Image (cartoon, rainbow, N blue to C red):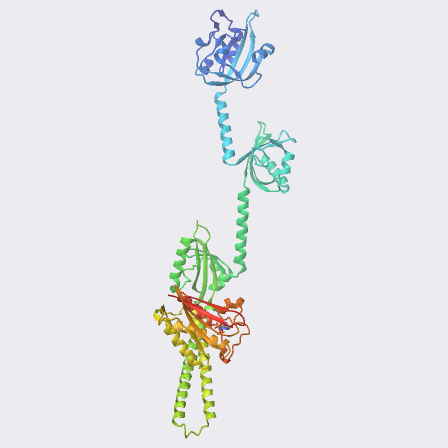
Length: 621
Ligand code: ADP
């Protein structure tokens, strides 16, 4: 190593001991007064990318443009005064890029005191600085992207220990240390002591401190933090600090709680044993079931837990297809609407059930099924079918026979009277009495017939077995025939007809059904209006529809109950009707409404109390 300046010689021994010690650092010796460089070692050559030849004799400040990053800025002044300067410098390398160094500068004087030199020993910090910067970048990224809070806790500084949080929004601003007492105020009182104990334990055991604590915001809102800290020790093993991270788990906690609450609700529902509930897989396994379900199928909980129960094996063959459809529905839509099916219980008996199910989530094939035992209802339905059969055959058939016989008797009696008019032994009053009795018997039979028919008809509507056969027909003809029938049944009543000029009104309908509706309106008019008042029947032709109406001079129907007269089994309270044939179920108008709706038409009534009623129905043309 040369210690020569272009014009002077400097004694080497003066520096040798120092130089040897710091051989791995860049060493520059310069004249304190004129800044000229005397010495430039190999490390300096490498660090600044300039050879000693190029550097020696140059002006130090011009060459390296040093700038203080730390330590006092007025370096030369301090050197002159104190003989030493230490700090971080930014200097410029040969390619113009900044070089960060830790620099120690010492003032040296030669023996005769003529020359004052500065010995500068520089350690390259550029790489370390870059790493530091990178680290900071990573930390910032992690804290913002991962919503992570950073904290440190100083054991040595106690009791004024500070927790320095990176950030807990609204509560702990980033980078501002909080002292322990302030921090304590934020922590939920119940969590404070346990968290201190946990920290102590972690320190003793040389383990991480792992905790969940609640912080209370000024407005009382609670925030859950998941906290993890790592104790740091000095060389003697004394705890120094704890470095930690924290993240907000409020949302997760809230979800856990909602989940727990809904699980609890579900459990309640299952255990309430109101309906049968089973958790099953789509493939068939019954994983869980409540008591109701178990007693329905007759298996024990032990048998269920042994995994013996599959809904496929307890489903009878005739319901397999229905079940498969339900499974398909569950696969596609996540739910299956109520279906009726049956299970074979352990004793081999079939139990009818109503089943609805929903998938528990999309990831598993687990379903929750709700099962209602409808065996009793099914039994009742069967009984009802039997009853309907009895009504239609055992009651109606003899009634028809009786009616026929009475009508036959009437005719024979008439002929008998006519044949023996003069030599009759019967007095005219006796004849009249027999005729009246026969007529009354017939009327009672008609009433009964109508009641039975209404019952059957409404049952058919409920079962969906009502049949309507439409065909092109003449509405006027239907009305005339019906009115004639009604005249025949009730010869004492007068009719007033208001028909349009047309000869025919063509419609597409079931003539028998239309006649049935009109007859019902007319019979109601008979029932609910005085004997001596007329019944008016009319037709109005409109652009798209035709309207048939029946008007009576009865008591009328108050507007508030008008909508109800079309309902099943509804009768206006106290409306006894005018005569004995008024016994009824309140089914007639209901049947009329359904029949007309089936034809695509409408029904209605216009009436005021005390002013009679006008019932109408419309049919599309
Ligand atoms: P019901 O067989 O009892 O007559 P409906 O369904 O035919 O049953 O009629 C329902 C109720 O509407 C009747 O009970 C009666 O109270 C009332 N109602 C029906 N038609 C008339 C009418 N023309 N005048 C007054 N009230 C009527």
